[in-house]
Image 1: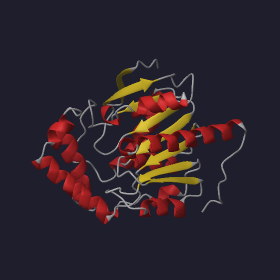
Image 2 (image 1 turned 120 degrees about the vertical axis):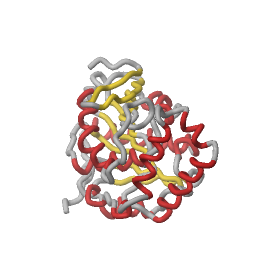
Image 3 (image 1 turned 90 degrees about the vertical axis):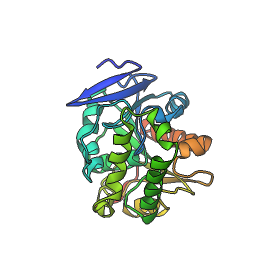
Image 4 (image 1 turned 45 degrees about the horizontal axis):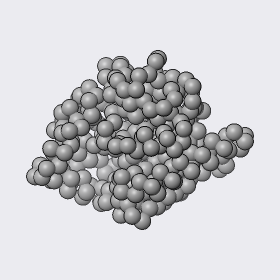
Length: 275
């Protein structure tokens, strides 16, 4: 398809908001970006534009169903809504935009979706994956911080701030936080997928991340058979691309450049024996 600079993709019964920056997927490698649990196209700020300028690659950003200006999601969300995104919707998006080669860059929930995709699809178009503040298991600090966010949403100006980005802000926030705070979400666990990722991975995490500890990094290092690089940033919390933008940009762009140079030199990533 011919991608405009912005618009909507029709994926089944979903109508998904997107932005396309730089060369199109049929003419250059492309970075596909997956937003956080309350994110969307607009909430990435200028990070996609700066990433495109720094790498020269195309950058494709979209809002998942129920976020930004995309079509509304059916509520309540199922516990495995991220699995559904990775297994069902993301492959269709990659095909629809004509993705030929490139990288997945995900933040928070988006990082978890990228990890599920990498562990359930042996997609040779994907050269590497960047996971910013990923979740592989549910920790006590995760639940506590989401509960705190929900309280702030109900009692402060947070609702008004988020309403600038989402078509139905209450459905977005309630639909997302209810999954984490109710039911059996503590049983949610992605470790089974990590052993099957076959491309290099970069994990970027803030030392002060209020939604997850370094245990998330340790799990990836223990479970992955692919190369795992880590950038643990001292001056960042859960949104390092906003809280430590230069350090985050440096880590991401240098990782992408290393992977691309190795590809061009015919150097394959060192993968340990499969489990």
